[in-house]
Length: 317
Image 1 (spheres, rainbow, N blue to C red):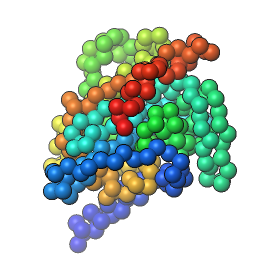
Image 2: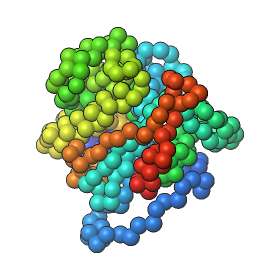
Image 3: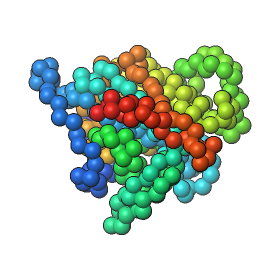
Image 4: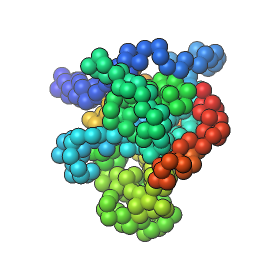
């Protein structure tokens, strides 16, 4: 009875960690259509979903809460999507492409519905990451769909403290840097070479930009993509199923700072997604950045490079 009660409490706790937003309900039918695909013969024999998926993954620079303020600084207002990745999982779910969208990209931000019943105004030449700031996850999804023409099946957001705690729960990650990094803003000092990073260091690596390249967001994206693969490799090499205590710590860290769409807003839904991706390894994940060029109106901003950007998005539909 005690064991059953403990398991039941753990499930209830993890399930209630997850926050969700009804993106589909807010956006309705004013969005790209889902592609029509025929089910594969193997899909009928499997109880798990195996179709292609597009997931918008955001790393939020929210400063709310003491843990986030300690890791990120600043105040609790004006949270923005500091990191944005469109994760395209191919049918069969053994291969994926991760496309990073630079936060400094100038876009036409569409009118987005607000929880108050009103809508934001269309904004021309707006920075991409302001979509989250003005309209939360719903506007972030609508803006991504507007500039890509790709329907987002799901949405996930994790904040500063959640990312750091997840890395710590996994026991750290292994990353190799190609150059020395010295960034006073992110408090990161790393010599070029292989490193085992704890959560705070991994977060600093994900946020650093002043210590690499030209100091723009483009250099930071390369480091973030290294971290994505390092996390996948760490999860694959960690025997979570044979270590219930660690499994719980990882699950607690992953869900405590997680916001999803309502389709993934339960522990059962996330577990089903995770099970369907068990054949996806770091070696089968391709990381790219949306092609961009310097914006004519502002040398510190970028715009999509055409026709390369449109060709990339078309390949994911």
